[in-house]
Length: 376
Ligand SMILES: *Cc1c(COP(=O)(O)O)cnc(C)c1O
Image (cartoon, rainbow, N blue to C red; front, top):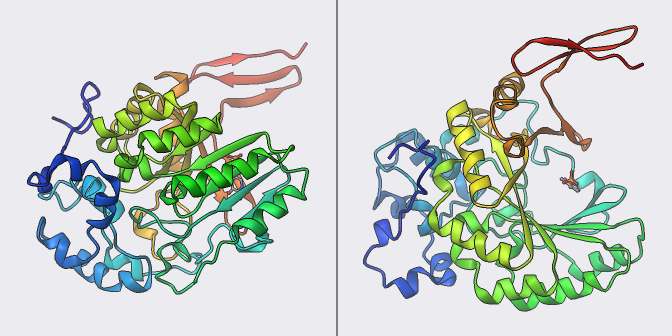
C-alpha cells in the first residue's frame, strides 16, 4: 500500500510487539511503560543511522527520547527517510543552531503571569498542565520545559492558575495543553473541568493533545465519560502524516465524537514529512474521513536545533494555493506563523486580490483567471 492511498487506513496492529497479549497491548499504561527511551531499545527494531545515533546521545540534555510502541510501529525500519522517523528519532542536526532560534521561540515566558498560564490574547488563556507527553516530537515548541531534559523544573500551579482565571472575567476560553493533558488521571481532569465549568465567564474549554496519535489506547470509556460530563469540549489533535491515520486512531476519534468532543487538527509543516502536495492532501482528506476538521497548519517554530525540519514560508503558501479550489474547502487548514517574540498567530494566505481599481478589487480565482468585483 502506498502511504498516499486514501482508501484504506494503515493498520499496524502489534507489529514488533506481536507476542504481547492484546489485553496488555490495548492498555495505555502498558504502552506508556514500554516506551522506547534509549538508542539501544530502538536498535532492537531498526538500524539507527550515524546521524540518529549521535542525536540520541545528546537527547537527554535537549528533549528526551520517548516513543510509544504504537507509534514506533508506524516507522518503516527500512527507510532512513521515513516521515514518522523524522518526527520522533533525534538527529545530530538538533545540536546545530542558528542565531534566530530560541528556547522560547514564540515568547510565551513574556506573557506568563502564573507558572503554566500563558495569557497572550485578551479573552483566552493557554493552561499548561504538565510537562510530560506520551512521546516527544523533535520540533517541540516547548522543548525548553517538556520532558525536563533542560532542567527547567516546570511546576504548574493549577490552583493559582484557576484563581487567576476566576478573577479575570475577560477570559472566556481556556485551552488545556502542556505537555499532554490527557496524561492526567480522570480524577484530576474531572476536578479541573468541574472547577473551570463553575466559573461563570468561561464559555469554551479546549484541549490540545497528541495522545490519540501516540497512544490511542488512552481514549478509554472512563476518559470519554469524564469529558462528556463537562462537554462540549473542543479538542485539537496533532496529526502530521497520513500514515498516522491508523484504525486505532479512527476508533479513538469515534469514541471522542460520541462523548461530545468536537475535533480539529493542528499540523506542523515539516521538511521531509508532509511538505509535498500528495502527502499533505492525503492527510487532510483522511482527517475529514475520521471526523476531524483541519484547523491550523503551522510553520515550524524557530526552536533551537530544528532548521533541518523547517520549510520556507513561500513553499507553505504554494501548498495552500494548490489545495484551494482543488479539494473540499473544509479540508483546508489556515496556514499560520506563531510570530517570534510573542506576537501570536498570524494567518498566511495566497493572494487572491490581483490589484485594486477605483471601483473595487480585481480578484484571481484558483485557476489564475481574473474577475473584477465592483463595490457599488
Ligand atoms: C494558540 C494560542 C491560543 C489559541 O489561539 P486560537 O487562535 O484561538 O486557537 C491562545 N493562547 C495562546 C498563548 C496560544 O498560543
